[in-house]
Image (cartoon, rainbow, N blue to C red; front, side):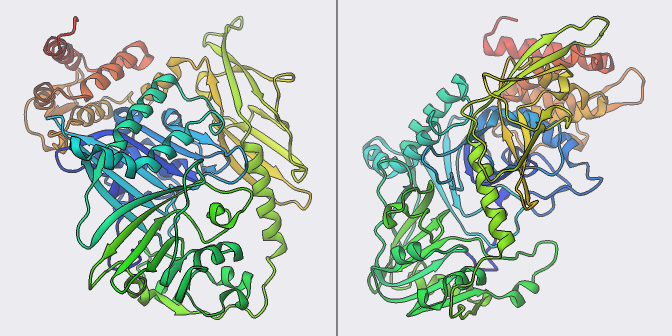
Amino acid sequence: MLDPGNRAAFTEELAPPPGFALHHAVGTTFTLDLDAALAVPLALTRFSDDDASTGEPRAPEDGDAQPDRVSILAALLGVSERIDIFTQAGAMSVDRPSELFELLGPMIHQGALPRGGIIHPKVWFLSFTNIDGERRWRLLCSSRNLTFDRSWDAMIRLEGEPAPQDRVPEARERNAPLVALLRYLQHPDVLTGRLPDARRQKLARFAEELAEVQWETSRPVKDLRFHALGVPDQPAPQLMGTRALIVSPFLTADGLYALTRKVRGETDVVSRPEAFDALGDTAFTGMRTWTVDSAAEAQEDAPTGLTGLHAKILAYQTTSTQSRLLIGSANATGPAFAALTGAGTGNVELMVEVLAAAKDNPYTPAAVQESMQALLQPHSPAPEPTEEDPQTEELDRLQRALLQLAARPLTIEVTEENPAGEEETSYQLRVTSTDVTVPARIRRLRWHLLPDESLGAEHLPTSEDPLILSGVALRSISPFVRISAEDTAGNRVQAVLMGTLIGDPPQRRESIIASRLADPQRLMQLIMLLLDFTPGAAGASWATGVGESVSHPDGGRHFPGLLEALLRALNHGAEGMAEVHRVLETLRRSPEGDSLPHDFLTLWDAAWQAHLQEEGIAG
């Protein structure tokens, strides 16, 4: 909730339970910062991260070495095939390029709704497993995007496990909106890129397993309900009661009316001052209005302080002891609740509803408001609706135009070139887009591949008029495109898009990995992290110095604990063994292969053969 003493760092909520490791994670976010996305694999593997003291993704600073940390590389290698993140096309951003984003690429899927509106849910579905094959599930539904934003947010966390056979029909009925959301986000009319068959099949299995999860509840919770707003054929919640609390940073008159028209008593609304003033005081007749107290926020410690409201909470008192509490992504606006307001276009949202009944019910409007009262102050909306600042309004319109443009699929076809006299292979890129109509509001457009500003143009190519880029270096190839738009007033907005790479050279990923592991010490650190990525074995530290060591031929490098880690991995059937093998094979094919410690390779080859025999695989 918004209780100042009841905080949870987002990345800590992703961490696997003790003795378990990630099986699969699927997340959704409206806005996505690529730097923040690097924290997700790190949290899901529990690899150490000495620089992250708060448990939250942090924005990189000048001179920050965060993108090169071995722990992040190990996490990306360990779980990138088990993570899928769905986000709104045109709402992705980054301050500074990093080659590690290329390892994030396969797990990010952009989409745009065919009839307008935005992909707005902020939910994570997490599946974990242990060495005995047991499964645990977790659902995190919140108002928080995957960014560095420091606003006040709200989150609900549910733990679950596969339902007993006699409870499967009940579980399937309850989870149907969750499954419908996952399937809709993968629909060809929604995705702006191609979802590889292997990922699509894994996501289909994941959705089927999610359908049969039984979520844990405790008193006074009587029932759980899920609402996938904006997903076809999904009903809207029925919102009514004798008292209501609405917490929403954004408000519209039709949205507010839809949420309060069946309330027969008092209503409290918590929002931002500018949201109240934009509607004027007549929109809140008979309601009490509140904002987050800036003085209370100022008392927060600077390193971890939060500022601004971003939480979305709806609470309704239905009887003297019964209540309904909804937490998720939906603001009190027409687009969020289009099914209730009759708006022509609506967003996709997810809300989790808790139905509770008890004498001392902690989920009533009064109890929820009391939990956050220390942060609130009364607010009197402006007598008349205030007009939005003209420049802000123009920026909003330009941003919407860029979102509209970002919905068009972009394809980047890669072919190998061999120019005469060139020792290093170069590549040709053929860039095309479909149905490109630049909105009239955009006067000037510029885009380029994220790693290289010279690889771009000031127009979007089409299949009839493609853009051909020749002599492109391997490490300059990328599906990520930075695009900027400018209007006639000189306002400028930008975003990062993802194109579909066709013919992506497999050695592109390998070269990125190899370039970061030329130092044997960094390689050994990575290997120790990967070997410990095993349910039941995770958490053993390579830095303890326990066990045998392997020396580098120069006599100056020692890697304590390696033999112990290998034996532990063999004993537990570590999934990290296969990833270590792929990394070493990559390095052996690269120029950096000469730096590999020979003693270690001898030991590794023997361990790998033992692993293959244990798994019954021919060497």
